[in-house]
Length: 368
Ligand code: PMP
Image (cartoon, rainbow, N blue to C red; front, side):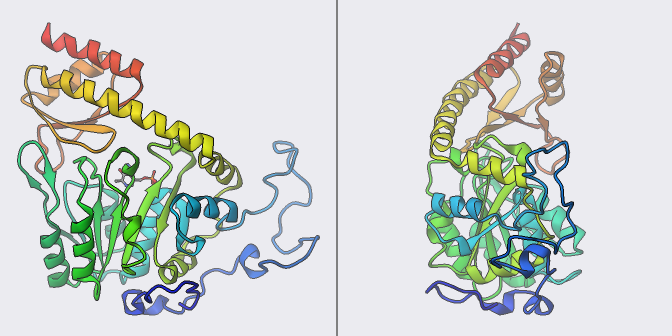
């Protein structure tokens, strides 16, 4: 825990699992000889020659565990330092790393605010870690995260992580930055607060990245899987205090970012691609407004929830019939009926203009 390179307040080391505080992790061929000025590399048992599937040999060698150009590109995008960036196989991997790094196997705990993204609880369960729930408040048109209750629960249970998705999935709404800051402060001596901004590009609110400098125990997750349009590449990041980022990288499995994936990630973060992403986001928001109005006219639809994301949470008197109508038109939406409090709910992603036209046509069937 000594790689801190900035003048920020230290990360409270006691929040890291005691047995991992001095853990060096796996010493891979890439990490064991960083920056060595050699031209002949015989230390990783790779093939001497390229594959016929990759005649240029771009993939012949193991990648850098954290490809520097990609890390730099993320640091630039978030106006932060490379030391705070951990790149993973989607933000899913960062969630898992956080659980494994901060919670003892079979102990400690995490706090979540259901309905929320399922991987927080899955990662905790796979590590034997108790999951404490503080349900969101549902007023029929909007879900609200009770950050005060999350803080209380974390303190009562001694949990090590509080996970908050903002915008939430499947709820869609953001948690105000001041509430997030207050939550981080309220539990700073005992838990890390993870703000998952997978859908952040669709929201008007500023990113919680703005709070990182002042709050050593805050972690922000971002992903290239949603607005950036490269879900298939599986690239997500954690932005964390440099001390915590160092430990997370040591806990991570070797070579998490394959060579072609790193290249695609860099392309997605090039200025022209970022500009195109911004245009796509605006288009999605315009289409979303149209779909909201359309859905509100559908018989049996009781609520279309407020959303700051690229999807809509819909409650219907007969969700089965709605699902059936859409499925008959070849349209698959997310069935949420198995989730507590969502027995009548579906989640509909805002897709392309053509897809939304097809959705509109299918919905007309219900009005006909
Ligand atoms: N967080 C939230 C809130 C999500 O909805 C998702 C994906 N559904 C993820 C994280 C995972 O994203 P990634 O593709 O980066 O693993």
